[in-house]
Length: 103
Image (cartoon, rainbow, N blue to C red; front, side, top):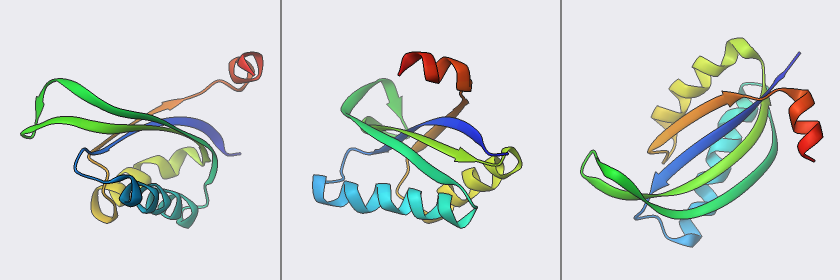
């Protein structure tokens, strides 16, 4: 059974709006290669970091809800590092009952 995850993706601040769509699409493609499905995506916009990370001061934040087999999450992380414009990514496993109550 596929698990529901919430992923916080940070893209480089140097990406233009026209370049952000293909970057998000690349994340979706990598997810689908591993048998996952995209539930939703929400753009939070450009945010400054509390302290510089790898000489960067800000990034473009996007929250993506997706379903993926639990054993595939490490492979997904590795694919993101190699194949996409993702600066950072963090994943949380979401509880199905809490998500249903929020909606």
